[in-house]
Amino acid sequence: CLSMRESEVRKKIIDTAARLFHGQGYNATGINQIIAEAKVAKRSLYQHFESKTDLLIAYLDQFQDNWYATIHVYLADMENPNERVLALFDFRIFYQEKHLFPGCPFSKINAEVGFDQERINLRVQQGKNVFKEFILNLVKDAVHKEMLNDQEFADMIFLIIEGALISTSIYKSTDDLKNGKLLVAKFL
Image (cartoon, rainbow, N blue to C red; front, top):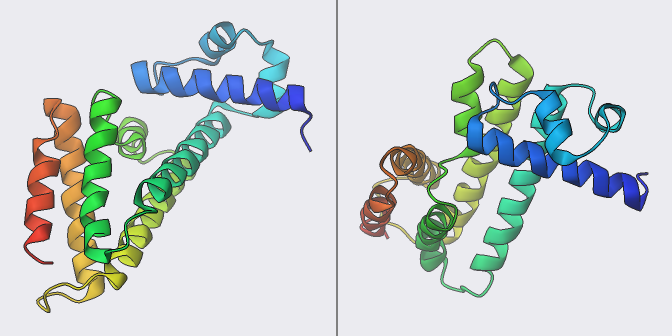
């Protein structure tokens, strides 16, 4: 069990790494830069993380936990299941605009590390699978046209959002997320 101080140091390291990974990329960020900017001793970093990969995994875990906690709060007051499906797009639009169009950290990391880092690739896949399951659970409660079953409808939404997130980070615009929402609304 981590003491309060150790927990604060761990958080400081992850937060610094997150800012640097987001701002300049995973490959361009060195352990020494993280140590310097977090103002921690090298020993402290390695007490919490055996490697840069471990630190990246912790960052992705923290991002995912925070993202789902936030979206659950965002959707909590919505009783209409169809509105909840469409609100997923609203949340993505809000998040992208608030954070200046970062795209998806999982997709960015995957593009940056390539296929040679299996542990990272597996973590990215796991993150995407959690999102697919989240969408499927939203869709199961919604009433949608019979053209697609729940899984197909969830897959379609996932693909629209994933493509729109890439577009969002390229064009610095949420137009494709808004268009995706309009397309999905036609199925509800």
